[in-house]
Image 1 (cartoon, rainbow, N blue to C red):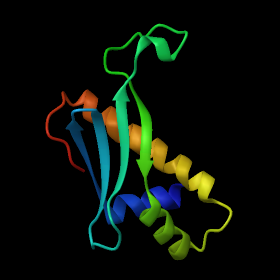
Image 2 (image 1 turned 180 degrees about the vertical axis):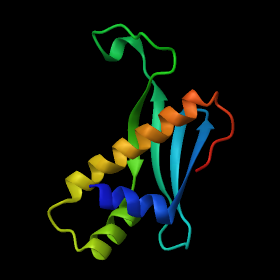
Image 3 (image 1 turned 135 degrees about the vertical axis):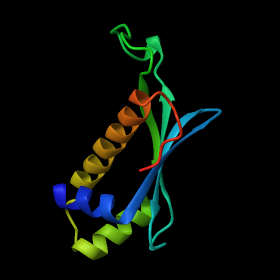
Image 4 (image 1 turned 30 degrees about the vertical axis):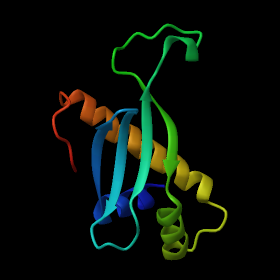
Length: 111
């Protein structure tokens, strides 16, 4: 899965935006090859888990839109049965980006 993550890091920029519903990580193609991919996060609430929340900045993924990025990766890497692994890699990358954003003090973040 490292090859997919490396490809995304080389060909996409990642931006964290805040809106009224929470946060989102936007994957924008540097060469306009695909439309933007978006993963939405919302603040976690105590009732969503039986475990108490220990951290203030706890977000969960609530939705994602990666149709065009998946289609491009499927064609570029000739993927057929590996979309689940690619989806997992995208989720992991998004969580790392969000962690970097939250640890940076919520300043404007783009990588």
